[in-house]
Image (cartoon, rainbow, N blue to C red; front, side, top):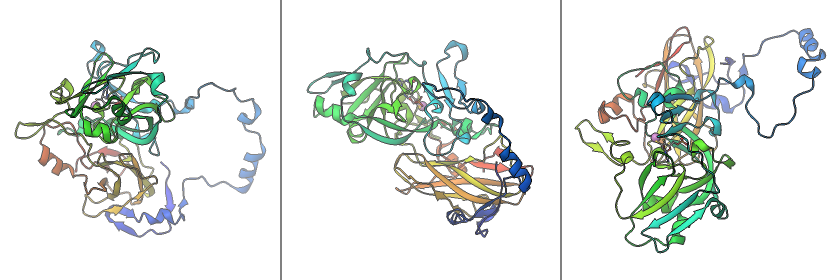
Length: 426
Ligand SMILES: Nc1nc2c(c(=O)[nH]1)N[C@H]1C(S)=C(S)[C@@H](COP(=O)(O)O)O[C@H]1N2
Ligand SMILES: [Mo]
């Protein structure tokens, strides 16, 4: 990590060396990361041709790929049942290697219950049926003729961060713990458009969405959400969906648990009651301390994590650092993110980087002056509806050791005197 040496306003605003977020806004940061060179050495370097200036560069390519020097930046794959069902499991987005709010399509996290189907868009159809006046079937070419909307939104698996929701503290990177969240610009047709065309019957209350994959994953979704802001996505970050994200058609439910954003969508059936499918009964339900389970927890609650400071990295010594991370809420916009360096006694307000969008990842940053002593850094987000990210002990008290889904507690990264970083509950 680069180490900064001076900042315009080095007055700490909270314990543990946290500085005012305005120190960045004034723009007067002197970085100490560059190597000092003599004027002669600087000139010599610039007058001699570089190897890359002496040979012709390689030609054009039809579809670009990242530099070969970035080959280590990839998803962390965790299969569920090994060779028996290689397409069931997850892969985590490497959050600590990314900046900004948009996840490159090739690094979007994956959750498949039975692999990625290979679907020819010319063969694929979406059927709207059940409690409608006119059952309708659409080919992908027909859907592409409808007016489209675009929104940048996160999708988070409700199993995100489950690896630390229990009592164990595994040695994993930021992305390997919290990387079942990704964010894309999704473009497509609103569900409302097609439901209005089909004509919703008065007794319809729920919509069953079903995928065309080998898991035939199905979820029941309240009709109100479908009419409000649900999107039938055809494009992801400007290009057609990746197969892993549901090509050629996926449902995106802004802010709601990822499981309900059905990929490879092939039907929407309007019904009067939930279908009680596998993924809304035995899975994605929250077992409470009293032995009862909460069945439907739709919006993903407010959450944040420091991504630029990840377990597995070593800080290069005492000095000034930019600590940055991501915050998001299924309830709306992020209102504030605070960072603590003293176990939660005092908090410094972080700067939110534009744009700050509803149900979207929001980037934050704060300057931090590390004095070289052991310290723990934590971030805590609040959304515009007043939801505040709970401390871990409070989350545990409220939900108990059985609940693994919907974990949104404050994460602490503990930094030791060597600069090593660890996942440590606080
Ligand atoms: N048809 C289908 N849709 C699905 C799934 C699936 O296995 N099959 N997995 C769900 C789960 S649990 C999540 S978290 C998201 C993951 O979306 P992603 O793989 O694009 O990140 O898709 C959901 N939609
Ligand atoms: Mo999920």
